[in-house]
Image (cartoon, rainbow, N blue to C red; front, side, top):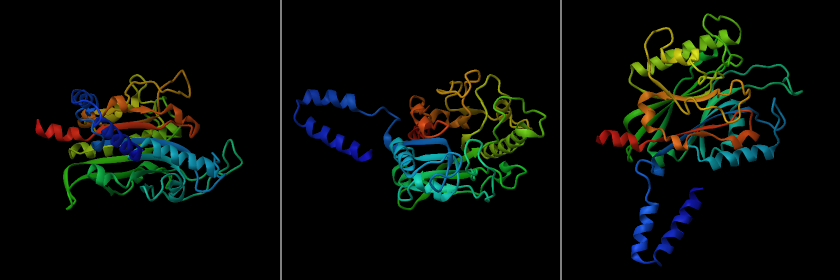
Amino acid sequence: MRLISKYVHHALHLAVRQIPGWLVSALLLIWMPVPGIADDRILTLATWNIEHLAAADDKGCRPRDSSQYEDLRRYLDRTGADVVAFQEVENLSAAKRIFPVADYDIHISERPSRKFAVCSHSANNRLMQRTGFAVRKDMSERLGIRVVRQPDVRELEGDYGSGRRGVYLVLEHVDGENKVATGAPLHLLSIHLKSGCRYQAVEGKNSGPCGILNKQIDVLSAWINARDRSGQNFIIAGDFNRQLDWLSDAVWLRLEAGGKTGTYVDLEKALHGVKHPKPFNRKYPYAIDHVIYNQALDGLIVEAKTSFDAKAGKYSDHLPLFAVFDLSRFEERKQE
């Protein structure tokens, strides 16, 4: 995509040389980038539950052949996402099939392996479901950002000992050849919370899906509060398995209320209140995959470019959510 863009730019430059000066001025006004939306300072973050992505062909609860893996790889490349928070990926080998190591650094959960029962709709056995991030290798050069892996948030696995952990990265802004960290870092967390409690009550629940989610929300609230107390910018992306946009959703209110600490945290959510383009149940038409972030980042999000990709429904039972942040607005704020 970038090669095509460069070719088009070069062709336009040659064409402009052949036309009158007054028309050149008019064209420059038309093609001039919108302030604050320069491509070289745009960070596109996606979150996607890729539905039982396996390391081998025809394995797991969504068996795929090699051509389908290649189709997935090409799709992700076309999106141009800089950072992909993924869920339901078996292991590093599975991730490498769609995120080539030549182009991406892969950070996947250290969740230990265990055996699972047979799938509900397949004769195959269920495979591990790990969370993680795939990060474009050229992000340092293009955006002046380096990635520092942090320990997994193990507390999210609950009482299982082999549950779904959160994968935690810090994006540091770097300056010049010295790669010295500048500005405030950005804390990222990829999560996959317990299914089976999309809109039901969670308060007071100690068992079952809602009981597990109840405990996970306490852990997530503690992580949010730690970032807030330290004045750190953060983004949580993933499969919350919860319709946080449902009117007065108890989980969303609790996250903003700081869990059980009573410390209010002003959170924002990409596509807040927007109904899902392909709801599983039309009676409850909201998303369960979300990108949430602290209020200070709200001025950076490019809402016109933030959306679910409904065309990706053929690849997974979840749609990828793309949230676009304009990092140049950090600099604009410094100059104000």
